[in-house]
Amino acid sequence: MKHLLSIQQLNRADIDYILGRAAVLKRERGRHPNQPLAGQTWALLFAKSSTRTRVSFEVGIRELGGRVIFLSANDIQLGRGEPIKDTARVLGRMVHGMVMRTYAQSDVEEFARYAGIPTINALTDEEHPCQILADIFTIQEKRGPIEDKVVTFVGDGACNVATSWVWAAGKLGFELRIAAPRADQPTQEQLRRAGGNVICTEDLHAAATDADVLYTDVWVSMGKEAEAAQRLQDLASYQINQALVKLAKPGALVMHCLPAYRGKEIAEDTFEAHAQTIFDQAENRLHVQKAILEWVVA
Image 1 (cartoon, rainbow, N blue to C red):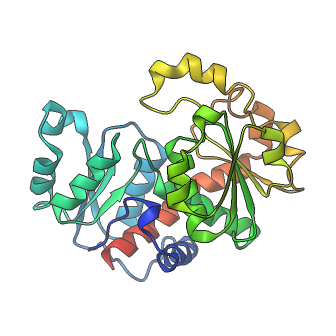
Image 2: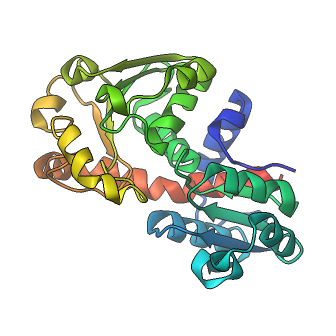
């Protein structure tokens, strides 16, 4: 049985399969010859709010022939203190697969261990593997193989999205630069475990120079609202704007995993100038997650 809990668990063949199938599924949307989830019911168990993740998984499951039920953690007994492992053992007897969006990485790992059904990490505080696989797909769709590219992540370099980028760099061999205050950079232990060509720096301009991709995320992630004032102060100079884009390679992609807060992590005019790429990136969540669903049930 397969799960997608972290990019760390994937090998290069797994990643190539998912990205390759995503391209096929995108071309064939609306006329898929195979329905790998036919006769199955999948649950989406979300403890965090969502737009792109929820809609893309619900639509994707249905387009692959399955049925879907949405469960808010606050609306089931989990919200009243039932242990994850008990919820997992109940749902594992009733549904065929789980897409889980929650706070602790240990929760999605524990669910997978006890449920006995394919489980997909749709975001935790530590990782966001579906997002980064969709981002890599978008880069390759627009610019070709990622191996020879430089991806510069700007902002909170210790967030879940940046962590998944670190794992991806170790798997795929591209250069990842993280421009962030020292306190918001990955730990040396994370970098050691991931391997790969990852450069962490406080020098935003150096990190952006000749980059193929400039990438950012919100400065205040869900669950970090109490730290908002300090984060806004610490990260104020780490913005993607037109001046920064000029340092990157001509035609560099500007990417944002959304939602975006214009005037903070990205300037309004820069966001709108690169909106086509950013919303292609959002759309590709659907196609890549359909490929992930195929992969876990194959």
